[in-house]
Image (tube, rainbow, N blue to C red):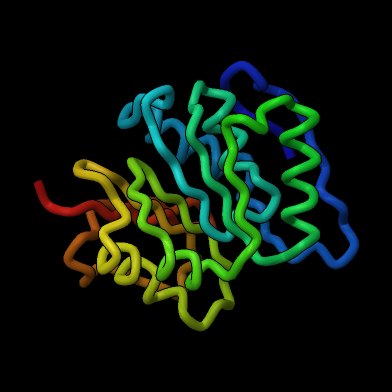
Length: 181
């Protein structure tokens, strides 16, 4: 995997392959998503949250573009250990809060609000369809905030009241959610 933009552009990092419980977003899909976000967000002013953070790639992309307030959540010890190690190697620990816990427990317990939330759950997660509802019920987005949920074609949110856009990159879909202005 590599960082596709910002001051760490081109930097590669390789998560351990044995029993790695993640499905990293492809570079193609990630580049497309960040092209959209570049036109919507001021990374230096964004407080972001990465749910089901896996390798930490989404956080690294934000930090590489100037974000100084990134939060990462994943329950798998190997993922969390890898992200701590990578953040130390990049010398960005001051910009990254790391939580090793179940994402739904984090959502229920946090009092924080964010400008941007990315959720990249395992595609087979049986509760993937309730993620947007939980985030909006807990009022986790700041005004004008944006939630992006990565999923496969087996999930569809066209009837969700806060869905504003859907982008399709092969088997990767990004659904964009925001509260009406």
